[in-house]
Amino acid sequence: MSKKVTAVVQARIGSQRLRGKVLKKINNKETILLLLKRLSLAKEIDKIIVAIPKKKEDDPLYKILKKNNFQVFRGSEKNVLKRYYDCAKKFDLKNIVRITGDNPLVDPKLVDKIIGIYQRKNFDYVSNIEKRTFPKGLDVEVFSFDALKIAYFNAKKKFDREHVTPYLRKKKFKRYNYVNKEDFSNIRVTLDTMNDFYLIKKIYSKIGKKFIYFNDIVQFYKRNKEVFFKVWF
Image 1 (cartoon, rainbow, N blue to C red):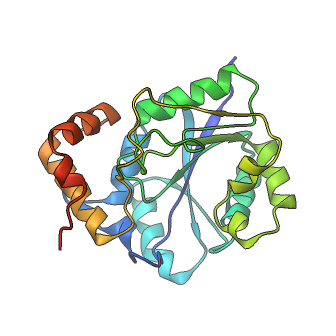
Image 2 (cartoon, rainbow, N blue to C red; image 1 turned 90 degrees about the horizontal axis):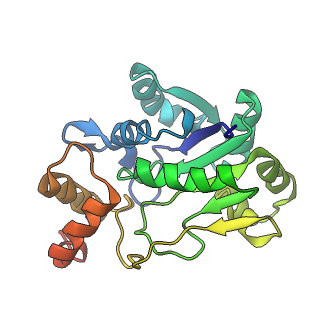
């Protein structure tokens, strides 16, 4: 029997480098909704919860998520490790896939692949980020609640608590890193700056498919490498 895995997507409006990026629109849809729609195609995910800060400035994000029938948890703004732990406790989650709200091109097939590895083996933590071969922006991390709990009660450094999983990658947890045969770690499709936003808009418009997967991005990159390194403004 496979382990149930819940996606917990962290998101907030108050990003330091690109404020309100999760509500920026591509094809008339907020990027957070594009992400969640894509993630909902993952077959190995039991449900999706969006974990956002319990802060007034995040109320517009909360309203959009609820309007679109997504489950929302509100918790600590800066201590994101605590936000994840409190969310997992509230919903009695046993296995979690962590996705960040600045990755609107998340690939549900890749999510399923990494969850599948986690389900078949007795790992505490499986990801594709310890040795990067996938573009920044296609990050997937799966871990057990037991590992999260250990991190929550033992991680003391501010960085470890802000970024959730560094403690899991430092200590002697049973880990596995999924790698791609070809290395595409030199490109980024994450949303952190206005330049990233213009690139992701270009990817959506040029590929022109309803759902874009990793292989679509790779093929587009091989034909249009200059687009990925262009300064748009």
